[in-house]
Structure formats: C-alpha cells, structure tokens
Image 1 (cartoon, rainbow, N blue to C red):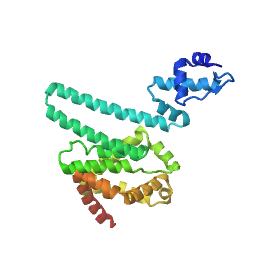
Image 2 (tube, rainbow, N blue to C red):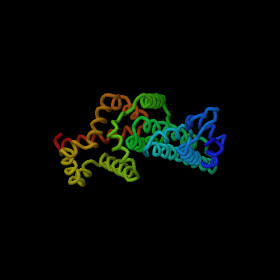
Image 3 (cartoon, rainbow, N blue to C red):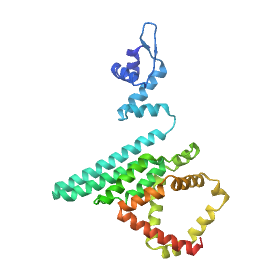
Length: 284
C-alpha cells in the first residue's frame, strides 16, 4: 500500500509518516517508480508510534521502545517523568511561598538547595542502574536539604558531580533482571524502611541491637547460608563491594559528601560509633 492508505489505516498523517521515516522509526521499501510501499506490519508500527507520540514520548525514546521487547525502557521513561514532576512540584511550592512571604532571600536559599540536591540525585540514578540508583538517590537526597554556602562545600559539590559523571556501575545481564524485579513500589517501600531502621540504629545503637537481637541473629544466619551465597543478592553485593573499594566511592564520593553536608557527616560519625558497638557485641 502507498502512504495515503497507510496514513488512513494508522490514523496519522502523510506529513507525520514522512517525519518518522526521516528519523528512522520506520523503513518501508520503495517501489520501482520511487514510491514508498507500506506493509501491514508498517501500519501496526505506525499505530504504536502514533500512540507513543500522543503520550508525549520523544522520537529518541520511541526508537528505544520499538527496538526493545521488554518493559525496562518504559520504566526508565516513567521514572524520568516522575523526577521531573517532583522537580516541578518543588518549584511550585517555592513560588507559592514567595508569593505569600515575599521573602526573596529565604526562597533563594531553598531553591539553591533544591537545585544541588536534584543535580546529585539525578547523577546517582544515571551512574547506578535501576533500583540501586533510585535507592541511593533516596538515601543521599535527605542529607541535601541545605544550600551550598562555603567554598569547601562548593569544591565538594563539584567533586561529587565530576565523580558521578565519570563512573558507571556495570551489572551483568542476569543481575539486571534481578534489579528490575526489585524495582517496584514494594521494593522502594522496603528501601525506605531499611533506611529508617539504619538511622534508628545510628541514633541509639545499644537499644536498637537489644530490641532487634532476634532479627539480627536470623539475618546473620541467613547471609552465611549456602542459599544466600549463591543468590543474585549476594552476587550483587559482592559487585558493589568491589566497586566501592576500587572505583573511588569510599575514597572520593563519601568524603566529598561529608564535606558537602554537615548532616551527612554527623550521620557517618553515628554509624561509625554504632559499627564499633556492633563489632564488639558480635566479636567481628
């Protein structure tokens, strides 16, 4: 069939079809006289492209969606949009505050903090795949509520951005599937719960260890089991351990975060104290 019929059957326009062909989303054959010839499969592809465009998906993202046969690229686009929505929501809240208070200095400080926080968390999501990147963004984001004020903080912020722009945590395909399975609402709730528990342990390690002794014992037993040692979770943690030791995470990123955020520095000091108490109790 020719372009007029393809446009009619797919519910789009000739001009749009020409554009999609130019962008390589569609590659119909040519007849001897130079006309594009569309197949039924091309029409189905046009319907998909038209739907995705109506949902606001960019041409570049559509190419990725059409070339993959899984949900991962869809999830990536959804998460990017959610981050943009959150950014817009924060901006609107600050505009409302400014409209009521007319306190330009206070709102400026809050806006500066939001920009630096968004910059770091976006980089974490890009540097670490799927579920892991989102988890790190949640964890570190809560320590970036204040604006950069000093030269030392400015240098630390720049060092963090340069570090995250230059690293990539590579995960084998079989473990990517494991991460994708964890990338659910329930998985994110579990991350928030674990992060809160770690904060509680850092604030009052003696009582936390006492109140959670049974859980700790079961956890220690589990991670020493053959079942865990051969699991995707254990393999992922080993990859992460090597990354943190060999790729500057512990020697560049974490020290820079401590210089950037006094709240994070205090958190690390508490964790170190809690770790000493834990090690003494379990003789590690």
